[in-house]
Amino acid sequence: MFKHIDTFIHGDNQRLSDVLLIHGAGIFVSSCIVYINRSLAWWQLILLFALTWDVVGGVVSNCTASTNQWYMRQPIRTRFVFIGIHIIQPLVLVWILDNTNWFFSLVLYGYMMVCSGIILLTQQPELQRPLATAFYVIGMMLITFLFSLPITLQIFGYLYLFKLIVCFSVDHYQVRQRGEK
Image 1 (spheres, rainbow, N blue to C red):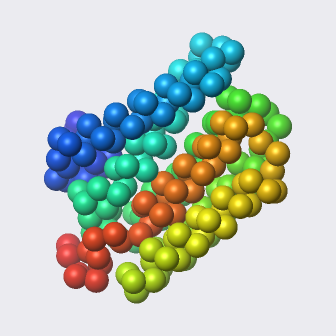
Image 2: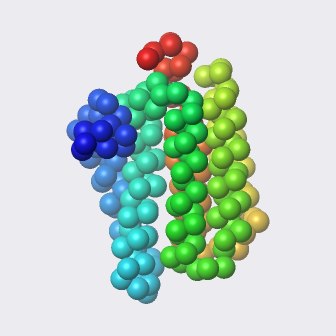
Image 3: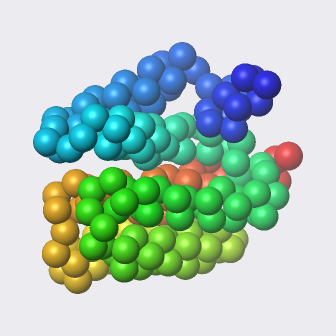
């Protein structure tokens, strides 16, 4: 069972150096975010730490060969389910930090779903990366200029879009072009 969970998180052939980078970055950034928000209740800090660790770890993990290649070999439906379940993260974060930015969490999720969907359906690998980059930069501008957000929500929005649009949705190692199964 743990092997299956590990494969779902890290792919099927993750190197120790990658796992250390994934979790080291996750723990470091999570600690910084918790420090910034240290006035929150203990339960909020625990949830914030775990949520940040997941997002930052996902940014790094989704760019590793093992994770990216594993997901790109999965049916496209599996990839859509993966991005789809990520509605939970912005909703939980808004619930933890302030109950006034529900619209932001829904716009963030909707924008991510549309952009990630377009990239997942794009068959030309040479177009995926620049398209994802353009979507990410536009998303950053939307977060920055359309919403008046606390710094933690801004940082989360940037990382969330980067994780799912640039890191997850792009076939970085051209697995689909090579037709690997």
